[in-house]
Each structure stands twice: as C-alpha cells, then as structure tokens.
Length: 149
Length: 149
Image (cartoon, rainbow over all chains, first blue to last red; front, top):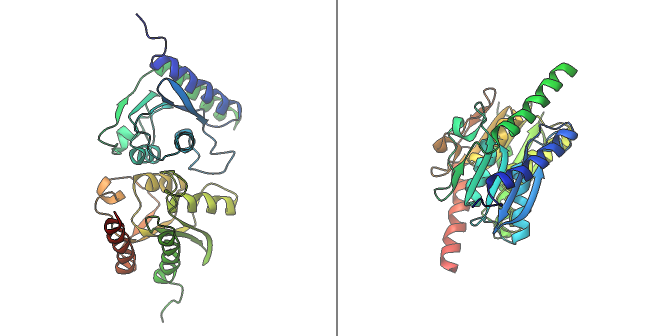
C-alpha cells in the first residue's frame, strides 16, 4: 500500500513554500521540517527581502523547529528542501544532528555534495524527490529574471 | 611605525565579545565586523540562550553588518573572530563575499580549514591573531564545564 505521507507528500509542502518565495521575487526555495508526521516548521528563502545572506529557507526552518521543540537538536526530524543545501545550510544541519535530509533538485555548482560539506554521521541524505518540479520553478525564475534585466 | 588599528586591536574587541559569551555560560566565541576602520557589528555566541545552532557569533555579526550597510554583501568588510569559523559560518561568509577573515585560535576538529569549506575566491583569510588569549578563554570554559558536571 502507498504511504500517503511519503517523501513526495512533504516535498509538495516544501514546494508550496518555494512558490511563496517566487511570488516575492526571491530565488524560489522552500523548506519544511517534520517530526512524527507533523510539520513543525515552514520557511522560504528571504535573502533579498531581509538583505541577509543567512536567510536561506533551511536556516529559518532550523531556527523555527528548534524554537518549536524547545531544544536546539533536531535528532528526530526530517528536513524537506526543494534544492540541495549549500555549505552554510549543510553546516547548520551538521550542528543540529538532524535525522534525515530530503532534497528535490541537485545544485551541481554550490550544493553540499559538490562542495564536500560534511554532514553529521547520524544524518541520512536523499535527493531527487520531485526533482523536476523543484528544478522547473528555479529555471523559470532565472529565465524571467534574465529577460527582465 | 605601528598601526594602532592593526589586527590585534580589533581582535581584542572580538575577545571582549567572547568574554560576554563566557559570562553567559556560552562557548566563549566573539566576532566583530569592521569596514573603513569602523566597527559596524559586534556579536557573541548565543546558541544555548537562544536554543539555536545557527546563533554563532559570526552569523549574528553577518546579519547585523548587512543590516547596518543596507545590503547583503560585505565586500569591503573584515570579520574578526576569536575561533576559526565552522562550515556553517564559512559558508555564510562565502555568500557574503567578505573581503577578509581574521581569526584567533585554530579549530583543528571543526574549523573550515580541516573541513575543507570553500571561501569566496576574493576572500583573504588569516589565522593566529592573539591565538593564545583566544584559546585560553575556550580552554578555561571547557575545564570549568567538565568540573561542574
């Protein structure tokens, strides 16, 4: 039987966050954090609006989830993010000791895989969930941005 | 002639921030950001108080400096930090395109050097400024913490 709450189900919620970023003319990346089938944090990239390179979706989601849980470790949590985390976000996830990271599109240029960022030994990482949808939104954003300039 | 505003001068200010962290029973790490001989951001580690792994001194300083400047890039800025930045902070500094990073003590276990984190090609990095003072404060903190447990 199909699990109705599988990785695609949660990645769709991360994609909804990415759409919110897109609507604000931010690079469309969204993230959610789930524990025991419950979404405890939702965030989208706000680097332009906040003028802050640290305002990636994952960073905000980590802070929000820790706030919700009342503790800084996310050992039982799964992060769903539409693009492979960068060095900064993977570094933050390292400190959080998160259980699992699920990402959509690969970031071949600046993703933690290419950059060789170390994750916590207990963290599992899975990529390619709803990859096409996640990638398509990013591609559309950059095409529109280029044609506007 | 000695420059009164040399790296040691600014590292002392970062150390003052580290002492503030120490007094709050946080891992004593402090950071400041300087542009054109002016300190535009001061911060110290607050991960325990805020229950947030992202609340490293450098991350807060980056956000504060960008806020001061009204733009997210720190291309003309220098960060002084008492301990070598971790993957997360070095990753944030990569995005900020900061001009220069000056750190005190080396973090042989989790510093960006050991971890192989990439900095922006335009960023210069210098270590070992007031190394002993920076290290001594950290050593004292961990000895006291161990004896309290």
